[in-house]
Length: 255
Length: 202
Image 1: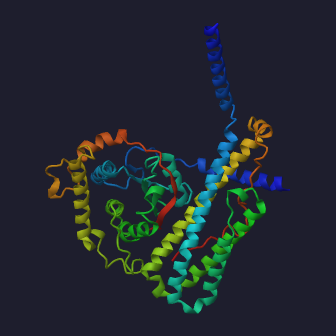
Image 2 (image 1 turned 45 degrees about the vertical axis):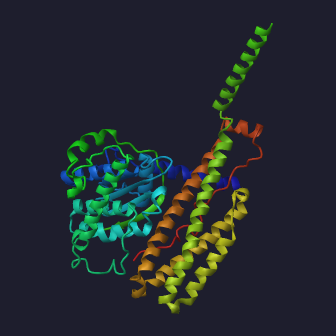
């Protein structure tokens, strides 16, 4: 009897595993994998540069991926399986995060590796999704939603949690401006933060000279515009996952 | 003479090295390795259940402030939590299917009680707008997902371990050397309460 039961469970699992193996994952072509063609090329290049700067400063790998659909899987399952498949994050630290957007399913998710769960918590991820990204997605502005979302993720990863305001989900969306209008100081702060982190790192000699030169970037370029041309070419061929793993942390949403 | 002895010891060492490499290649280490992997995966399952248990007092406290009329539901959650945390299945009792089943039932009961609590809280707009509650809600959601992932990893690890024992050549090693390591029970995928995970949607 027990053997029979056990066999049944095993059989179920063989099915489940083959079902998972049946998922087709896109190729990791860079820090931004835009399979669903949702991003404008300029935004894409800017994100690539931003994420590259972040990895150079902290070693944390953040990847943006857009998918045409989820192939029938739940986005929670797709998220951690894709993260493990690519091995985003350094192997011993598991410090990777994914922003996944599934176009036809109208779902999105921030998938957080074990090593980042203390900063990019479920609550923070949910605030970013519901407050920053979804409002822009509702108006069809994917480029803006994704780039603001990534900016917010990097702010949070920098150790500056966002407010978790009392009324988030039920205030009427029309009245709220977009993220940049409501929090202009936050974007400015983010930009300054990224720039100063990199500059300080370079001055102290922790960082190699990165895409932002230590001299003239205090004028406020986020490292995006200034470095987009040189990074977009080489980041595409040399970016690899570091072998990090995922355990289902993060948050999901839909629009 | 001396030279010959040296040569002989050298040959012996070489033979020993070859022998151990061959043995390792035959999978003599597979069963203990997979056993340890299954145990580690179990640790993760417990870890995530514990995380959920830790979130609950906070959640109950927050809900209590807004929904005093729901005493029954709140009490049910607290009781289910107490019961679930009282049953600990550590790695030594992992081979005990009875205990594993008890553990699973207690956790399922807690899932059910939690899901009723979340349904009830739907009726309180003030509660739904509470910042602490929103944070707790998304954390609970994330924890449920982590539990699901940890359980799947555990089931997969046990599957690998059991498969190794039941197939050649692991079967041979098992009867020769590791007969004290039994086939492991795992979570029953067909448990009647499996679909009762808390639905925390608004």
